[in-house]
Length: 235
Picture (tube, rainbow, N blue to C red):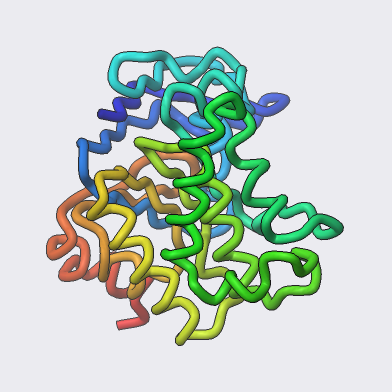
């Protein structure tokens, strides 16, 4: 279980997160809605160990995630697929995927089985495995980025804006795989501006505005909330 209590992040006097409280229960997909600058990426950087908070706590199954050591967080089951994918463009698809298992590099046999499963999830990557990641389309790169995160053997997957810049059909494919990943036992915290797609797969959600949680509820509660419908669903 992910438990975030009164989490705050400050940059040179600017409060990016202000006493945020949030939970992700085992087996859930939880969506975090918010515009650019709302604090979603700051939250993910903190949960990944890339950013130390100025206050509050974040734990995964009781283990603190706020020590500022990304490899520790990955080794304890938390992996992030960052906004913008951040692949190594000069390396092949296969090498990018294998880098996701670096923390578990001694587990050769397990990693090979997991790599085979990633290719099962994204069969379109099989003929591209030796292609340079930088030569792929945006949708293909997103699939590689998610696959690389899965190679870290996450129990909790942090997905930051996975639909950004993708065609609607590709977004459908990405979210279909997300549902399958979740069905296999991986909890997911999903930051998205595409509320239609995100709420279509999420169990619960939160709305983040100016670094604060302004609203939370079930999938249906958020879908039916006039504030969400106006701001994020265009209704």
